[in-house]
Length: 147
Image 1 (tube, rainbow, N blue to C red):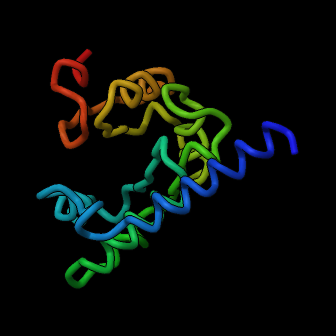
Image 2: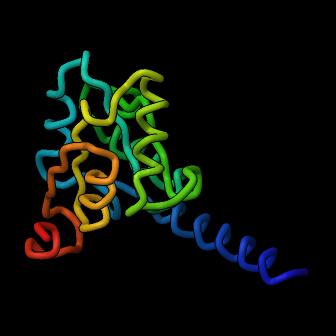
């Protein structure tokens, strides 16, 4: 086997183990996130892009949907993408362009807002021509998110 074959196998094993650890305790939404998404008007399309595997994003949203009240949060997302199913991960804008296409072939990125918790999110949004909103839910300090 080649190094590429071995690294691909190991990456899949890591992703599988990582995804198996997703529970409401390990990947629950921060306070207010569920209500924020719930209050976005229905006419506004919602997508998710992560630098983790796309299966991780789907699993996190499903876990939080199962913990939801009376509303299917998972079905609210028109596009759910990860670094493994877009041409290049963030800070490249490629994933954001794919999400726009998923939501509507004619969706202009400049009509979108990207909310992120890391500096790479802001760089990707700017490269895509999107407005960027930084939040402090992730592991980055306010100074790094603002940079």
